[in-house]
Length: 371
Image 1 (cartoon, rainbow, N blue to C red):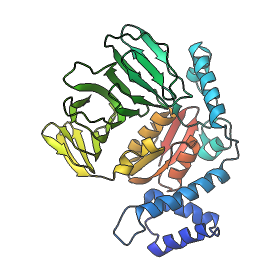
Image 2: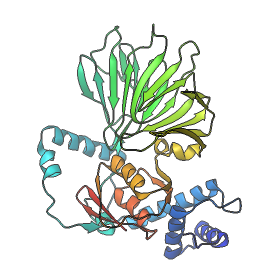
Image 3: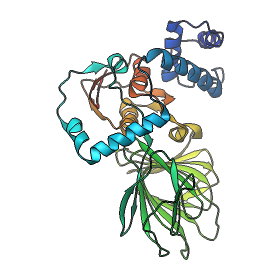
């Protein structure tokens, strides 16, 4: 809340640290955090803000949700069972039948057993000429090198690879992420609803070329003799060895390439660490950004920084695999903040509602957004 003074904010943070914060102060603190905009050096620094509000978030999460959470292992088993049900067609009936129940509030959703859990590790791997396999959701990633294909715990995957180079496609659905170790030991984290096409080996090639749709974070192994190329919507990123993030979803107006370490070239532009290239139909521009915000998704956060509600809801839609519709006049405010990507959807929506600038109703897997 912009009306809060620096001293009021610091007092609330101190009350929390001493265990004396009232429910009203906790709510105000969260609301302030969601709408806070940096106004100068006198404001609390970013690290202090995030650490304090994360603690508030953890307490509110425990107090707000009476429904017992599933353990990580049990949640994976439930998710696997749900996937199996969908494959044999049972889940499709419940997914596509018209909603019979009326819209409910965020609070009612939180108190029910119908709350939507966060995304998990899930992806498919397609091998040219050999079909597609569903990857194990209890693992976080795979490593590919020629005819050798393994999970990140070194478990070998029985797949129809051979010594000849094959084109592979790793694809995550809405509500899924997965990690990939490429044949050159470069690492790629794929965000939800994303796709990476790459060869099973880079041997004999003048460059290491992959193609991205969606969002991915790259840590590229250095090899000056074999540049690394990432092709995405409307651009080609040339790399020798570096860490960077590309956000290139088809439903976003901009393709954003953020450099964390090293250097990369996009056309005639060479990015430096801390810079982001934003490509649109009008061209490309470079700005300074907070790199930690840009890769928040990789570190288990949903991050929104001075964003309109439509942009925020696209992120929520991808991560929770939910439809979003709008009713009436839309909020025109910019929202800023971060929430845990491990939270249930009711908890994320409630944080936004604390600003009193946007409200939600839920029908099944549909979020209705109102002002």
